[in-house]
Image (cartoon, rainbow over all chains, first blue to last red; front, side, top):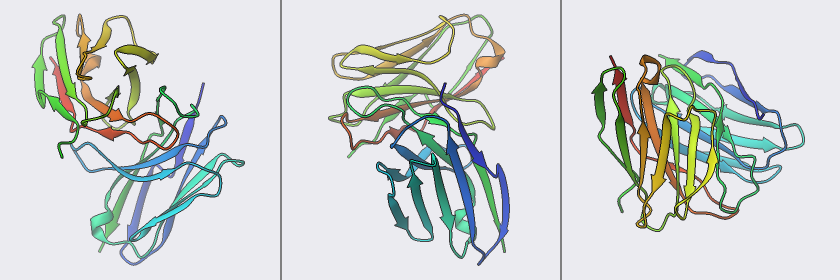
Length: 114
Length: 113
């Protein structure tokens, strides 16, 4: 059974600081996704990582994927209050095609303080 | 373009009742998946349908069932509701193939009392 572990689960940081969220998973996969969720809202897609060594950046967020280590990171640069949310990583063990199933981590609740 | 739409947005039911949740995928998407998100947890996979066929099922009891219609919309049914079924139910639609991602609807908040 695929397991996805995120750490930390809770992250309180000051504005302007940098930090990294880690996502480890237990079985071979080269399809990993990062989502953001605001309280009471649905999931917003942030990054789609589909190959080993993939790196994507959007604003203050950068995500990377190391399929050999079964590890993805979400790096936050110079945090601002608007980034406060819960961040989930999700893994799809299928190789594409018509089967699609995501296994999510427990999420990282990020609070950015002034 | 319309995203994934779900109805209703909120629902309160009594234990033992039955509930039907509905989802319309993004136009052109033939795959629909359902997830349950209990407060404070990540979403858990319930079902995936593609071309009206069930392609995957998570570890949920038989009280949970779903179907997909010819227009690719989908329904999730839950019978004999328990308090523990209270959650946000998310529907996601996607294209199929290697380079694809799931787009989520706003969810249905189900409260069982």
